[in-house]
Image (cartoon, rainbow, N blue to C red; front, side):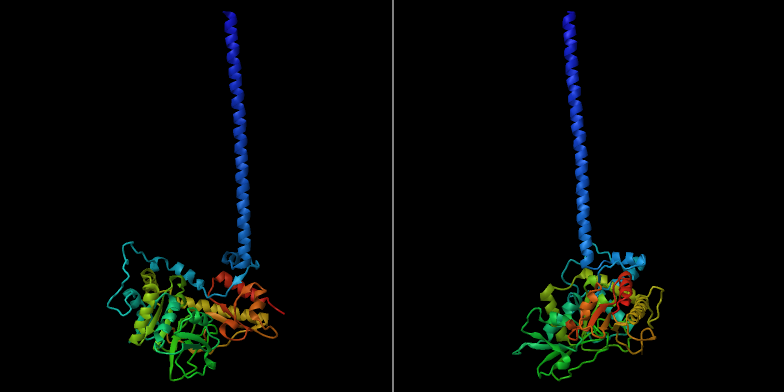
Amino acid sequence: MGKVSAAFSLKHVLVLSLALNVGLILRVLHEGGEKNLEKENRDTAAGAGAVMASKEAHAGMTSSSSTGAAEAVAGGGDDGSVINLDHGDPTMYERFWQQMGDKTTVVIPGWQYISYFSDVRNLCWFLEPEFANAVVNLHKVVGNAISVDHHIVVGTGSTQLFQAVLYALSPADTSEPMSVVSAAPYYSSYPLQTDYLKSGLYKWAGDAYKFSKDTPYVELVTSPNNPDGSTRQAVVNQSEGILLHDLAYYWPQYTPISFPADQDIMLFTVSKSTGHAGTRIGWALIRDREIAKKMTKFIEINTIGVSKDSQLRAAKVLQAVSDSYDRDGNPKESKAFFQYGYNLMAERWRNLRAAVNMSGLFSLPDFPVEVCTFSRRAFAPQPAFAWLKCEGEIEDCESFIRKHKILTRGGKHFGVSPKYVRISMLDRDEKFNLFTERLSKIHN
């Protein structure tokens, strides 16, 4: 009996020992697997970080980085990042609208504004009454255009309105496309937008100064002009011509308001008046009912109207601007939009001219001082774009400035000499300040 008990005890000890050894082995394997997994995770994270760093470094060399520019300015130096001032993206207004808080916030319940139709009694049936009222009120306050006896046609930015006008003005019984011209330097997108659809109704015919055909034509009069900021009048003045006035920049932060425009066809856009380019809303003031009707038809076929959400947001913004002034154009509060825009543009033009003088390689146009009927101050225009010329032996100004990692748009795109470039004055403070600092240091 003692032998049996001893054998039984030894058997249990062996089983227990084996179980402990197996448990130990499994634990070692498990901990080793966790450590390997942790190592794999660390390697994966490091690899992902390297990829992201590579992408960010590549992006920094191929596009502008506002964050990088801000850090460079804050640190008192130039980080060598590319500064892209080719486009007129009006981000300089962000700071003002941030300060406005909820005054321009729009909340739209999911059940509202589902219908295509806004006001079926209106010629432009997709025009929101709230937006139309805001447009009329703003023009009254600023005094830059007469809306009485004009039809308002809303579009997805002035680009769509431009196409709609060309469609509306084209003769139906012509044997050849109607010519579209503009005096050089003209807006670089006019030729592209005119010929993009390869329409048989109209075609781009170039510089208005060189146009001499005795056939129907449309002359685009952009005033203040993009790119050079000059005040424009019609050039061709033939009996068969129709004038289209693009007044996107006729606002008191850019130029003195000398009279209320009262043309047959006038185009405006929210992007340059208040800076809300992403809203994609523009409006046309059209005297002739049939032209307005044809424009409305074009937009109906093109996009079945215009976003109500965008119109309501634009209406809120435009009305906020109007409400900050009294009937005489005096600011009723410290945060008056046009005062803010004027001060910022004036400062930027002072800084740009100082940088150009320090460099000695460039020149800028001079503008006459005029009295603004809105602000009642005398000042020279301070355009949304700088029309910079490379002096001396520099023939390709765009390529020359690109070597210093500044992207601009060359004069050839505007129908003139490549010695000129257009530079946006509308970007964020950090990028613009870095640009003027770098420009001032460019020497022979």
